Length: 425
Ligand SMILES: *Cc1c(COP(=O)(O)O)cnc(C)c1O
Image (cartoon, protein in one colour):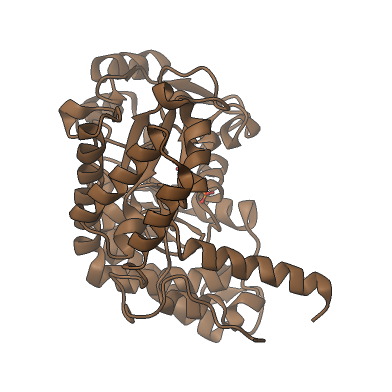
């Protein structure tokens, strides 16, 4: 090993060790299982496969095809989907495939605004804008952190989009799809749901089930509440043959070439595990987010939507403007080994200096935390908000964190959570 390699490796190892001592609270991250990690570093990582199983452009895909067909079968089963594509290499790439398949430059798609919690891929400067698609935003009710139903019906009737898109990155409550169904039917639009944040909750039956609520096409990341590899996926129901073909073509050769076969295999393993564990895991993640919200609220940290139980998902949003704002508090939390991100709240103008923080319970759940642990975590957060010495909080966090060293809700759940094998001592 030379100095460059040693430097890189040392820093990766240092990161692993650091995260093993941190409380992970970023709502879009998770931990893979030991089995998923094993296949992630297999020879699949070094190979190419283009096209669909059985119809590849490369030789050498005998076992890749078996795994990909199994992945598709597991996804059909887990999400009760008629159409599955496990090739998009991320949630954004899955979104790009939907755009390539169903929107021309100049088309209009209805979606949420960034400050309401939308993902950048749906915005003017993200994938939507770069496809030349105009986005028009639904009216949003700040009190309920959800769409205004009457306003949304009116907007859909006025705009008559070819595609109506739903799904958020600050995703506290399910959008009222059932109430909008008649309007979708009336204007004849495709209904697209971006499940990046809530896929694991959907798998566990703990959030709305979009494909049962009139959604035609669901795009997703597979590494947020769904505890798989950094990858993406497309799921669909009631699509015509032409629409399915358009999606396949958009995925390859539209927005992927090879599709990260190692990640596809790790996704397949995660789905096999989620078939067994999703319900229990997702239910605990939802209980934990509400418990965290309640405990923070009782400690005087303003959590959004107290009257609605704070959240129906893994995520909560807090307003920390009185404690220095999102940027400042997130930094002080990091100094105390609590990892979270600053976030815009609906009334914020600036994404760089927002007043909020977003917390997710899913990774804490994954390492075994329960409601009583959420009370401890809330007390650490409240101390940071109120200006307690970060060093003092950090030493308490380190002590607390010793109780959570393995990944739960998977096979081999006694392996080190943030483990790695050292090639050279
Ligand atoms: C995270 C996210 C994405 C993008 O996912 P990547 O896998 O990071 O590309 C897309 N949509 C929403 C709503 C997200 O939160």
